[in-house]
Amino acid sequence: MKSRSNQHFPLLHLLIVASLLTVFCRCNAKKEQPKGFQNFTPGKQWPDTDSVHINAHGGGVLYHDNTYYWYGEHKSEHTSSAQVGVNCYSSKDLYNWKHEGVVLPVSDSVGSDIEAGCVMERPKVIYNAKTKKFVLYFHLELKGKGYSAARVGIAVSDKATGPFTYLRSLRPNAGVWPENMTEEQKSSKVTLDDFADWWTDEWMQAVNDGLFVRRDFEGGQMSRDMTLFVDDDGLAYHIFASEENLTLNIAELSYDYLSYTGRYIRIAPGGHNEAPAIFTKDGKYFMITSGCTGWDPNAARLFTAESIWGPWTQHPNPCIGPDADLTFHSQSTYILPVAGKKDAFIFMADRWTPKSPIDAPYIWLPIQFENGLPVLKWKDQWDLSIFDTTN
Ligand code: DGJ
Image (cartoon, rainbow, N blue to C red; front, side, top):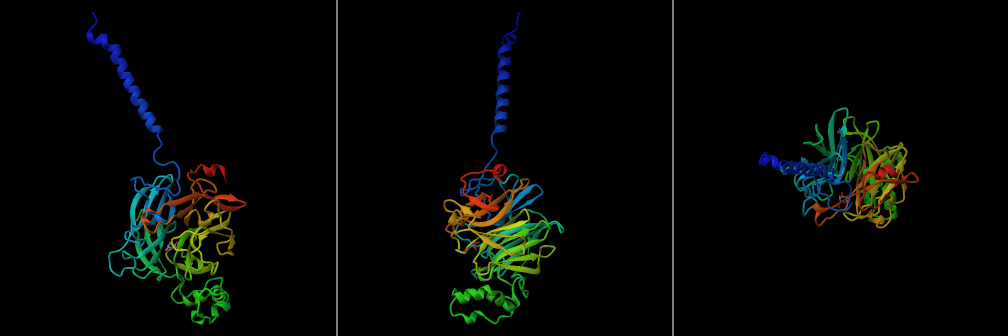
């Protein structure tokens, strides 16, 4: 006689197999579910892996040891001045970012260069392969002094994720002439006092001829919006808006990237460029900048050169399509080469929201090339596979 349990065995067996199958299928289904983001959605809120909108404005990205590090300004809810410091996020895929914390905090010491309430803008980090140090530069304005200090702050760390040690701030190239100023321009006796009004044709000509370079010669050149760039030969450059935001400077950094060699040039004197972002392709240099309209967007500008030392040639606005004249309501901050993909560059920009700085969205767009020049077209959504087909 069969036991009761034996009688039920086939049914029980079936049930166990069915539940195992369900668990197996669920696990498999889970595996196939997309993990996090798999594309970019420019202009939308961009949550980090803790579901908080990324707070790294005016930023730049360093690729190091198979990881991307995004450094940017921590912005608060009601002010653009620095209340917290420089923020860092890490990512393996560029879509999903983990908050690594504040890598250079503001100081609570009264009178410190980086006292809370100062301006710490457009931080960029580069890695020095010789010293094995991570070097951070940022635009510094001293607390309570508006934008008059126009200095660069320098900090250093042993690790990409910090903490960074603040070293000093300065105005670059004190007592040194730019390489592309003539002897006549250097020795000109024309000063600002010779002009009752700014912005006249004569004044613009004087700016072109180095009016502000001479004014700031002793104390160093003004340094506001900025980026850093490491060339293929390991030499690094600080590129910044100088001369009251009228002229860009490219200045070579020392072997340890912590100071200047004194070699520098002026680009587009009187051209009113800021927000510089640079990349190289096929031995050519490409730079995208903006005009100067505060937090409001304007049309991007494009410059190219065969050598970092110029001459730099200006081309038409690289943006195409609706809102191209406003850089799609954004302002450049960095151009990011995508690791492992040929000729793949991402244009990074900020859509500033000064009433609520913390909420400012990011505009990341793929750089495409037409007739050898970069072009930017709006995309509601895109992913890195675009680089497998377009360039
Ligand atoms: C435009 C600059 O690009 C920003 O970084 C910031 O300095 C604002 N101007 C301030 O008005």
